[in-house]
Amino acid sequence: MNCLPSFRLRRLIPAFLLGLSVLLAPALVLAVDDPSEMLPDAKQEARAEAIGSQLRCLVCQNESIEDSSAGLARDLRRVVREHVAKGETDRQVMDWMVARYGNFIRLSPPLSGGTLLLWGMPALALSIGLALAFFAYRRRATSPKAPPPLSDEEKARLAKLTKE
Amino acid sequence: MGLPLAGAAVLGVGFWKMLAGMQSGSFNPHDVNAPVLNRPVPDFTLPDQAPGQGFATQDLKALTKPVLVNFFASWCIPCLAEMPTLVALKDDLELWGIAYKDRPENAANFLKHSGNPFTRLGSDRDGRVGIEWGISGVPETFLIGPGGVIRWHTATPLDVETIRQTLVPLLAKLKTP
Image (cartoon, rainbow over all chains, first blue to last red; front, side, top):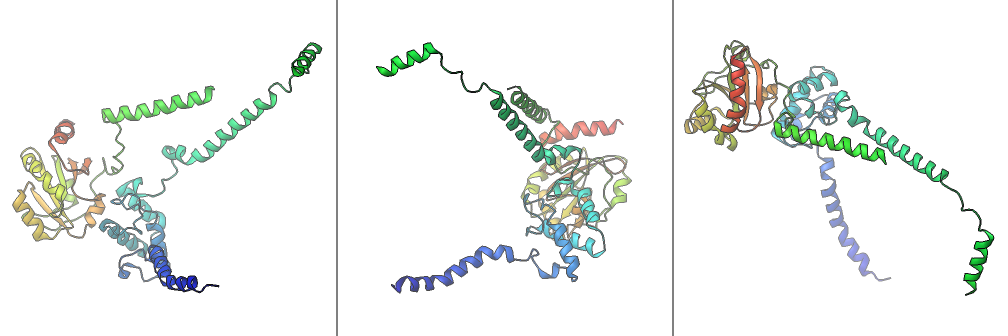
């Protein structure tokens, strides 16, 4: 075996690890910018993070406040932690936010009259698709079966044609 | 055959309604952040921001005439852009200002340069009052009706067209209850 490729490979390993660490870094970084933001109680901090990950950062539009480093997101994280530290339930914190910023701040819209179609659409689309498939299948099943056998006259004509 | 056609028709009517509503102004897809409309102003107290006097919830609730509350900051370019409009507006409508996440000296300097349209001025240094009002940035402007009820809100810089088309009719409505 040629030792050159393995030598190259060995040299590539640090580069590979470096690349991997760059790729994984965002997942490992703590949600908060500054460790002093975190609540001392690990259980409460976990709850605050869970609530924050359900709240939209309003200036970044598609990030949660836990993922964003925007100023407003940091302020809202602090508010969430204050409320959690006071012993409020997840629901109370969420309601506080919705009262000020509307349902837009929730990353998943609540189930209500206005969002019924939104939530029901997967089931609705699936049942419409199943219904269409069922009717299409039935139509094919009930369509005329094999054509009737050839008459004597047709057989004679076919024989004549194939002889030519 | 009939089912897909009916579906397409329903979709078409829905889209047409949305587009027609956008044209007439009854439907605004960007207006997702207006939960504060027709609600009393939130609870807050603001310290003075030079050169004005700070204010609190009670001051707005004690009002007998409409007031425009404007969040601004010296670091915000659109705020600078809307200042001439606010200065021109101040003779017709009282304006109260809130300096959002700004150093008091910077905000005071900003007003010295741009002109000061505000009768009263509060400093929201850490942005917590802004959160109570549900703002996500500056400038944001609220029209407060008599009794301290939020009647209108915009998260864009005020311009003459908005004032003429939206604010003036609203004010006329508020003055003749």
